[in-house]
Image 1: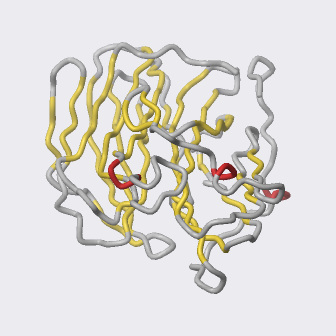
Image 2: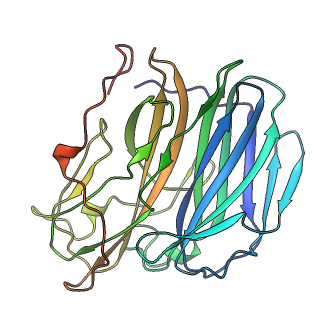
Length: 278
């Protein structure tokens, strides 16, 4: 696997307040026209539309900070969620690799696989790394599916974020340990199959497609899953790495929300450049 060098230019995005909110996740996105200016978008999801006046302070490593007093837009999403969109354009002043991250409101309080039983005291963290190249316009993938899914106790289910890359670049996926700060793993994090482990409680994850399949959840509670999506040009050059976390809610039978299902046969294997290994 190819690993990008960490940037010297860091972007810190943190919220002011939202303790005990109905927040369920989000992700960062960047776009550039080939200059040193990048537009940073943050998409957050909650089960209420009443948080539009929540402000963010966005700070950069050169000391510049900007307050974003409210969401640019709040739109209804699937699974009874609302997507909040925040955006800012910033001139990094140099080409090369850069890194952005978000430290946001506390995670849901019912997570069985993350600092149990105190998951509500853990901040949500997500990050984005990208390479600004002179004269090369690009944007990181956008995710079609919200970072939330419900499933039934003991039933097989699948989740796929359905990333859309406008430039048609190649994408690979890695399942990672959830973090609560920069390079700081959440204490007591375990992958979903380690909560009430057993022969039937297993999952598979495709690094080629990002398809997550969980065979038999054994506990009715919430689970937090984090993976990274790496973007490569057609010549094999690394362009960006997006972190995506998903809130999985395991319910008793009959309590599911309508959802899009993805059959494994409908998710194609990527035709990766020869120098990109899975």
